[in-house]
Length: 175
Image (cartoon, rainbow, N blue to C red; front, side):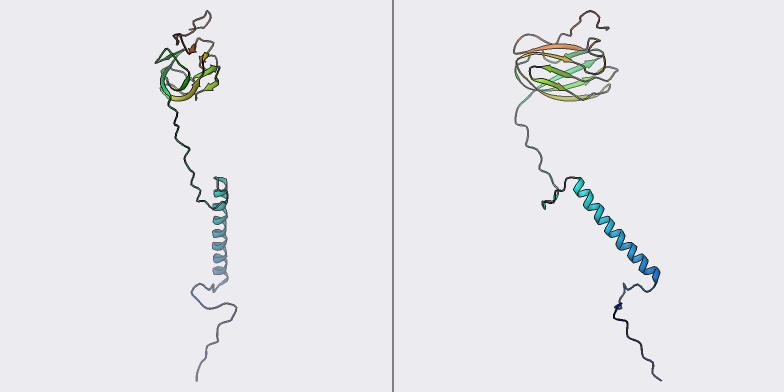
């Protein structure tokens, strides 16, 4: 007696990845859904992070180097006084490195002919930098943290002549 095998159904070709049970079909469907979800999430993240669909790989070109030379000035922010490493200022670009030597948070703000420029607020022992282009004229320089200006943490500088950096010790400054 000879036994013959029934040929496989044309709907499901035989092979190592053919699901054979309902549970296997469900697992395969879940894996496909998971893969599609991961692809959709990747596309969403690429779009949210600046992918604009122009075919580039998402790399950004660094900004051009700052070719303008700036004068480096150290600013010491103590409780409640501002001092600079230099006392005369000419019009031009400056980079102020503000170091907080006090016990409170401080920042540095310039207000004058070139507009207003403010540094980040830094805690005790921290430093920050502020790039400012100073024009000829008088600038009020102060700590913009609540109430510090009124406690005497202010000074004036004159750009284009004169000696600067002496804090304003008007009556009622508190310290």
